[in-house]
Amino acid sequence: MKHVRQRGIALDEFPFKGYERIDEVMYGWNGRILRVNLSNGKTSVQTFDAEFALKYVGGRGFAIRLLWDELAPGVDPLGPDNRLIFAAGPLTGLLGPSLSKLVVAAKSPLTNGYGDGNVGSLAAVYLRKAGYDAIVVEGRARKPTYLYVEDEGVSLLSAEGLWGRTTFETERKLKEVHGKDIGVLTIGPGGENLVKMAVITSQEGRAGGRPGIGAVMGSKNLKALVIRGTKEVPLADLKAYRELIVEAYRDIKAKAGYEFWIRQGTMAIIEWSQENYVLPTYNFKEGSFDRYRCVDGYAMEAAKVERRGCPYCNMACGNVVLDSEGRSSELDYEGVAMLSSNVGIGHLGSVSILNRLADEYGLDTISLGNVLAFAMEATERGLLKDGVEWGDFKRAKALVEDTAYRRDLGALLAEGVMRISEKLKAGSEAWAMHVKGLEVSAYDCHTTPAMALSYATSPIGAHHKDAWIIAWEVRVDRLGYSKEKAAKVVELQRIRGGLFESIVSCRFPWVELGFSLEWYPRLLKAATGVNMPLEELLYSVADRIYALIRAFWVREYGGMWSSKLDVPPRRWFDEPLTKGHYAGLKLDEEKFNELLKGYYELRGWDGRGIPRRNTLERLGLADIANELEKYVKLKP
Ligand code: PTT
Ligand code: SF4
Image (tube, rainbow, N blue to C red; front, side):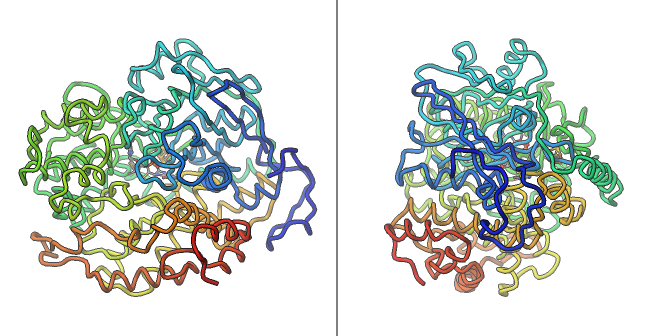
């Protein structure tokens, strides 16, 4: 990366086909990364050029390249040398449908591999309006600190009065000090106490960074980011861009599913999952829950008091209910499924309390539902004293607090299921529901091999974000192991994990309402002036990002890396479902391994799941291949 902003890169200098620069100025990107070193209190601006922008686009693409370049393999994720990255893309923060999302990334303390998440926030808008595309934080502050950014002005301020406060309190306090017109990203006690599933939150209901990115922030003594920006990102064709977004907003609103989406958002998935026997139930033992009606989208609608969302979004999905303590709680499918059916609690008011506490303490609801369920099963099996029974809301609530503060049993739960299982032993790894250390999100995979493949090959551990293939799989071929399924996983990863995480935009308009993908190259062209066809974004940019993330994992694991890391939890291979239409069925290990092999072939990775040298070279990553070769022998 060059440290001088370069304008007017000549077309023939750019090594990739398909781009057509229509202007000499770099539009759409600010071309600036704010660097913050908390150890010495210094801040600086690093610029990047058009080549870097076009090669990695933004968000996850920027994050993985920076982490690859700057982290020594084996670096302590909770040490000062880890980098905490907030990365936008060329569409982030622009006025337009669902564009206010931000990637938060670091080496993960939960998995020791690449970790990221995506949070919707006014901070994303203001980051770009302040003139930056990313913030990279390194070092560790001696005392609790928060970063204040107002256009060119950057200061590190004392957060001693904020440390210990919940995320909600922190954001409110910061607004008292700096006014309401700020974007805030903050951690709660979970991040402060280095809980391995701590997230970064915003706006009392947005959260991101499942693989412990909040703990990385806590390890740096960084309580919050406060951002206000007043400038406009330079756009290549403002008139065309404005015309497009008017049309795009209209298109979204006219979609057939719009009205129902506005009513239920992701909460509609509870009923769908139940009907299709994939609702996580009792630590993923079953796929259906007898009290699902008490926590489904209709139960939520009956209790709903407000709808919230990310800035500029016209399909806001944050459904707010009052919990049993009379407090607001913003619900979504993943959190509700994991904190209800998966732990045996069939009461929406109670589930909403657990969900709200997770937001206040800054803990990931998905991993929390997993560790609670794991503790319940361990208690049932006699492995935990003073544990927790299935469905015991009162004890579960106390354990959420204990986890955030690492008290008693909570200190163990704060480590996540992989480490709890390593401690308890007694064969518990067979029902520790994680991949590479990240807990499984809310879809049971006894009878959905492609979804299991999606978890197994996700670039951050068991998260559905990159390939939510289950809806297609259930509709098209429920139980099969055809290579078409591997191809579909790759296709979805390209779109969801590559395109949306690099441009950076919310994927819901496309996923939930069928907003065409073709909108994005059009928006990109108007914003940046660059003609990046969809094929280029999917087959070059997305594949490059995936190969680089995989290279990062392999470099971290060195000789320990093997395809055995790309497997779903054992429970789905060993224990069949006992209830419902698919009772008696489970995953077939041999066939799954064939599916995985097919996936590797499609990606151009070898049988160990390592990108081949020619794959890396084809993607413009020859330098990565040379570096990786120091750790493992690459296949040609
Ligand atoms: C995301 C994961 C999800 S995925 C959910 S609900 W989902 C949970 N949300 C949590 C939460 O809330 N609070 C909390 N304490 N923990 C939480 N953990 C879980 O985190 C979110 C929406 C949703 S709701 C989804 S699917 C989509 N995710 C997107 C994505 O990943 N990328 C993208 N480009 N667009 C997306 N749009 C949708 O955004 P992680 P948000 Mg999220 C409160 O964080 O680490 O990525 O894991 O950001 O602003 O809350 O919006 O049924
Ligand atoms: Fe945010 Fe939901 Fe809108 Fe996506 S659909 S931008 S997550 S409010």
